[in-house]
Image (cartoon, rainbow, N blue to C red):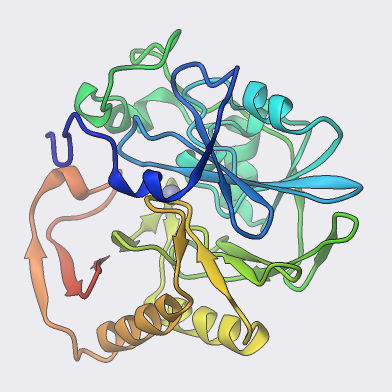
Length: 300
Ligand SMILES: [Zn+2]
């Protein structure tokens, strides 16, 4: 399908200070971001998933665990020696693939999340993610595209409004259904950074899911969630995204909220989308594509 493949590095990485990794396995890269945040990314896969490590004086917080296509634990162990709290922003494989490598993961729980944590994700649901064309520089070492699956992992529920104390640094949890029912965001009070999960980034924003494997999206829920975020965290200084470029101006919250309202209220122009490569398991074609400045919205 080769919808993105170019043998060049994404130019945005050059904006950030690279942290050398002894255990990057030729797959992970690490960058230091403003606000005492380390980003670990997987620039070689189409998902371009980002995970974030927030060190405190008592413990560190790891936000998401990546695709699990290589050993994320080795990287985190290199970057942080001490107590670690791990949280998943939602249950899609590109955020939970590495979860099994950690003792337990905080999640916004629902029956679909619990089932996935218990059973993992079988290979057959991930076949479209291991196509060679999804990989910019080939497969990571030791990776088998014939058998890749997400292993089961242990979860503990985290409530909306919970505050995670890292020592000298407190991170708020806000439940933000929209992309999926279990989506959550995190707000670091000390830096004013909002971690938007898959709800806030520039790229294709997915709001079309409606099955037990990918969960259920809701445009109405999306709008409400962004309204709650704006109300609860009026001082956001930057938004860090789980895909593509790490950092965004907080204006993206208003931009994406306005777009979702337009989609909800039928004001946005929509194109039918019949390209199967954009459809995830269970999506019925055609999907609807809405184009906005800097991002698109994909809905049912
Ligand atoms: Zn994702």
